[in-house]
Amino acid sequence: SIVKAMKYARGVLGIDWFKRGDQYYGKIRLKAYEHLSIGVDDTDREGDGATWALAIELMRELKNKLHDVEPIAHKVVQLYPYINEKTGGNYASLVEVAIPPGLKERVLDVVHDIVASRTKSPNTSVAFMWGLTVPERIKKLLNLARKGRVTVQNVLDNVNKLREVVVKEVTGLRGCIGAVAALACSDPSISMA
Image (cartoon, rainbow, N blue to C red; front, side, top):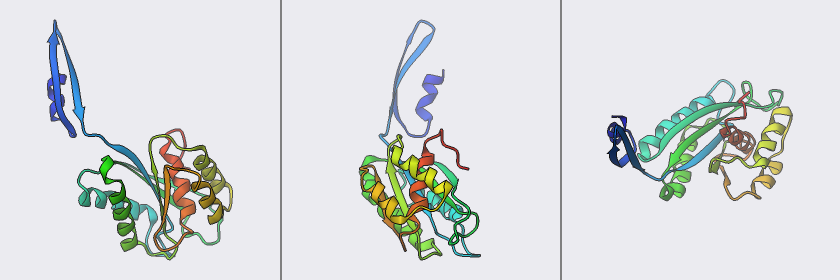
């Protein structure tokens, strides 16, 4: 039965099952994980590097360095394309992972180090958000960043009011605009474009 086979699934610690009549019933024990969204932006320079590529490397490296991290998704997020300072089409990236609760601080440091070692830009930032619910402030920032220019100060003022969101400067703060805006796309109802 499928209940008996579930014990072989990745991440299953154990299963208790019993049969009643022709039916099998079971309880599955899993590791505890927290959802972490990581926004990354401004990692490239004209003709060199791409934020989306660095974000994919970030997912792979996180899994290699912290074996208990489980990659969930990578998304590319379109922002306002008519910003003079942009490279390419003005896209940020979102990486979603599941992490054990005890790894929170370690993950922040490892992400910073991975991005710092690969960025080509003097303006790179990363943003972190815990949980499955995207705060309205973050959704509003994404909408603003898709329609026009947003200031670093506006982003930081909004983030400072949120417990579940942290911004880390890697080589500069300008990247926090796209990094924070990208966090909104961890809500499945929000489109990337």
